[in-house]
Length: 385
Image 1 (tube, rainbow, N blue to C red):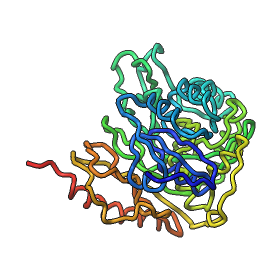
Image 2: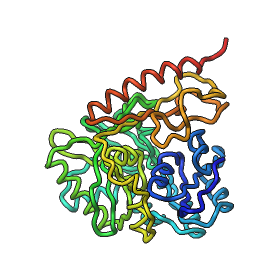
Image 3: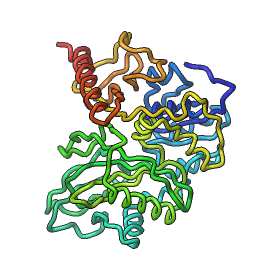
Image 4: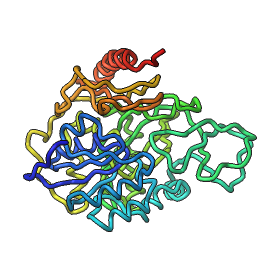
């Protein structure tokens, strides 16, 4: 495991996957300490990393955090679905993020849609358990504690009551985007927009998050709508720091789909493309300043993209990874499983990263690299006869 760099202020990062946020924190000038479900090889090679027990996740995050250095902390996905745990850990160390009460409020689909609707912003219709199920229209069923589009499936009219801890949401076809904001409690800055790269979930709906590319060009009216969203959401819910809004652009209208009030997966894409250190900006909104190394300031590179590759058959991560340096601060792949990790179909294997002068160039490089890595992964993830 990597050692702490005592010249930098420590920052504890907790969540299902901490690698992207840890890399962002290091570029910002922090010394990240990560706790997640993977403790991937490249993460552990660069920073102190601890693996949480899947069977007791997310409560195991709190157990591990108790024994770590006294430092402020941030959460990544999908701890926004566990506001009680956020408050519990927040009582032990400074939280650079919104509290459990704010999470409960902004993650309630009825509350945030009502706030936007009151401001005259178009929103998708949603229904919760206990509401009458729809008899017409096109709908999707979503877990209330959703993350990365997992568990979303088409809803068949006549299925019966809406399941507990779920919501129905009107289905819209269009361009899936993610808008990243920096909130200040009463106002927000639109940092950038990415196009979301989605894939088929278990139910056959192409809603599962696979990656992002950006900054994605948007029409002035779309940008104006997003800026207004940011202002309404921050003023109504007191959002501070980084937060994201997933949306669908359809027929000239932008439809908000979900609020993610924390560091989101697309942040590292915008940082790589725009030369930003957003974790530093995030920390400053909570009164924590950090000296960002000059080499990570204002390095605009045009566009960036990422794509998560998943196992298509069971297997085991190889003992040796001869194709990459896990300590490379600008890698072309990331999130490498620890040697010997058992992988099942649907488990993430690695993330492919690419940059280019335009989004088209970044996507082309991403596609070529992903194809190469898909062949390699399928080559060693095989079921033995």
